Length: 235
Image (cartoon, rainbow, N blue to C red):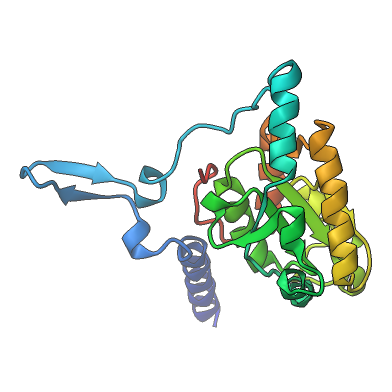
């Protein structure tokens, strides 16, 4: 009986060790390949396609130049088309004639590389947080985050859920909070007006805060994301 128990314990330990590594797909593991010239080279797919350096703080320019740039940024807010939760249903009406966000210089874009604003729309699951981090880090600076709904502030109705986060600003910095469950499109427009105001005043500098406190943010992210299979720097 003891031999069987020991055997079961050994198998469970082996399975645990395998499960810790299983989130790295075989094609993403470090390996040697044959180069076109016939030589053997070592590749690491997860890290070869991304920067190996931490983000750098972007110092604002001085005087009228920075004021002009902030005015231009405030009048050209390109939002990443990424719906994270139930609040996503409030975003499409913004582009309709009734609310017409285009008149405020707000429009949707398809990829992080084209965007400078990110709406976290409602609850955010741990699985989605991983994709949010990667998308946020791929956005060029300066970039801005709007937290839509009470779930991003204190977890809302999911405050004690094992699968959702309850404070967004522990994982990525937030420029504007829009309270409610769920805020209407008018509230979202009011949030954009507040963001434009902060940008013009030179106070929308959360991307620099993320760069300054990168190690702290990354530690918080890794505490909750157990299957971390991407590089620390996603730019």
